[in-house]
Length: 495
Image (cartoon, rainbow, N blue to C red; front, side, top):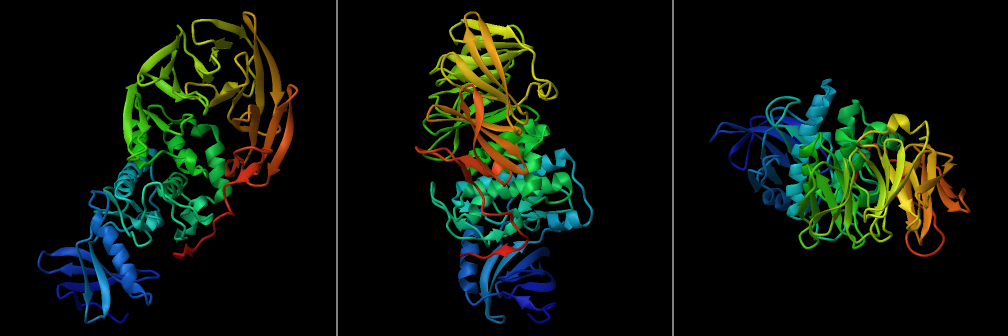
């Protein structure tokens, strides 16, 4: 486009300096003489199909009205320029990218505030059937001052309307912020969560790490609780392990520094624990519906094949079947590994005493020497994990530790066998009644099986451990890749 300053567009807006340019158009500063308001005019001048792109973005922009989404003020086709335009209020603080380039660094509380604003904006968009597909610092604007709130999300040019339960099959967005499933050809609202997680990690670290760096962040012990745990969940390469929607993300962020967790039951329903409240995702609306309040609830400890959720609190285990029912109460603090009402067993740690309860009052326990590598990781939010083998036995572990405990109830006591995985434990899984161990770090992964009271390697892979899931269904268990390859800098056009 030629020199623009002083020209008028749509017979109203007096143009000023260029602000930005992209594949589909140019954004120019302007003033509205009728109101004296500073605005930004987006010209769709970058492609032969600019009219179709203008229609798409106009439909999305006019549909969304939210305090943290930049509103569309005017639309039209300017005969003088021969171009379609959109008009937005000008964000005087510029983009988050501008703030980062100026050397602005963000505290954890500032990152939390920005995430809250963006999560609320995305929740509004998703509730209206709109997926953004290009969440990045360039599209997050400071409305008044450089690097300061209030923040607003802009540029829905890559966005699409998406029916509930559907998935996008086209590739669009910015590769460094793109969720892994987008490259695999399947994207939905959860993909926006991942992009927001990359933004958050960039703010926390002061630089944007690539795949191995993101995995290293997710696997460190500090990501067991608080804001780090929220960001780690956003960055999970498996979209099914992220938050069950941005409404849940908002609640988790608002409830910090309190505990939060996400769980799934046998019917596929997702549950959120945040701020002492348990909520269930309503399948018909994809919104959260309150279930009950669980005072001092820490985390879900039920297995995925359980019909109802089970929550470990500071001193009790609570079952959720439409209301909170105390299944077990003790006088001292407890940490929960795993619980199964179907198998009638809950495996707990009370100080240095390993306890199994039948959830009907009967208990067996033994004081056991805990693995040395566990001790620095134990605390109220320790990421304990486990799978029950039957009503008498279980395999117990701690995320990030090599040591596993194969345990069995024997009379009034507990027999313990110590096993050692070749790499840190990432997940314990049951598949076809067999216990499987996914272990590894940012350098690679292995899938182990429990055979004759020992561990055997079933499969391995060179990608970071969180980039794999265990193959579902019948047949031999294997590691299934969740990504195609590491993202490189660049843009992906709509396919």
